[in-house]
Length: 389
Ligand SMILES: Cc1ncc(COP(=O)(O)O)c(C=O)c1O
Ligand SMILES: N[C@@H](CCCC[NH3+])C(=O)O
Image (tube, rainbow, N blue to C red; front, side, top):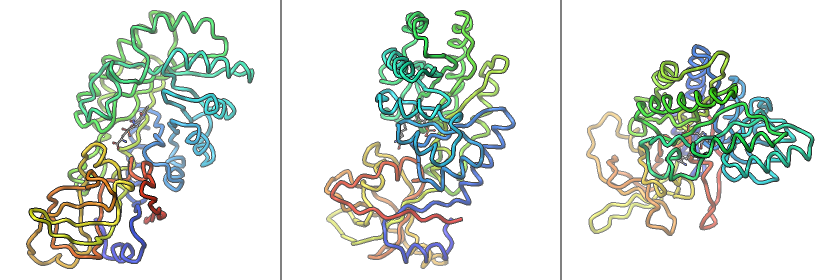
């Protein structure tokens, strides 16, 4: 995965930092764009996964739209050059300020998640003498079979409008002259690896979309959200997610009305595998029962293991290069960061070649929900990312 030239480059940089392999990103984008064309699907990249400008530019140039979840993301998407008519704005708690930013930019649509949000949007659009296009984010109560903390489509989750409230909502919409309902939106969770889940989603969406048809409402676009999972266990073997099967499921099971556009908001599956957190061993400490490899990145740089106990493959790039041809013994390390929290651990009992102070370590599959969730807890420094082709 890493050439000796790149490892040498890492060695010379101040760590920790994020490394992005734009060659792999381009390959992924090309693959997704080809399938989207085949099936006539529209892809809106979810900026929340990674909002670095060089990455956004590649996605924009490939013709993808932007899925945003804050006023700042909307502004950034417009700044990078996404056509306003390809920008969607989602989120359960849009503030008036954020709504106004999006109204001023004339974005494509607001994905609305509550009746009160739609009423406020109507007021704010009226004040600007505009009409806001909306998609209703509906909570379909479909289990994404993923980590509890990243499940979003169950009744107990805060996201979306419950199906039971839709009839009343349609009555309310009749009074709102500055709102135009054009779409339905669904997003049931992230890192979904059981693709059968998406078949279940399609069947539920078909029922809901037929109900809207029966009410005489023309739905121009169906937005199925994102959620396609990646292989964190084998990032080299499966560096591109299973988009073929994913899109094929929607093509087979989603009932698409004549001329209806189908949108996806993919984040993780596009950018996760092209990113790695590069860090350095600061100290090796041999505890009573555990060897610790203490590195200079922590949960402040990559929060996922601390937040969801998530697995990321960890490679010692220096030691692997040095011992490439030898059958060296492996040592088990807890790879931990310097932050004052016991959850600041990237992996327990990780099998690595014997490691030493100064070795370069790569924490893999960190391109999505890595750098965007960085914090400066403990007053941490922040280094710029490194992009390679
Ligand atoms: C509304 C919405 N759309 C799209 C995404 C992107 O999801 P993923 O990164 O799993 O593709 C998310 C994140 O889970 C989301 O909340
Ligand atoms: N931050 C989460 C994903 C959240 C997706 C956004 N709703 C992760 O790292 O897996």
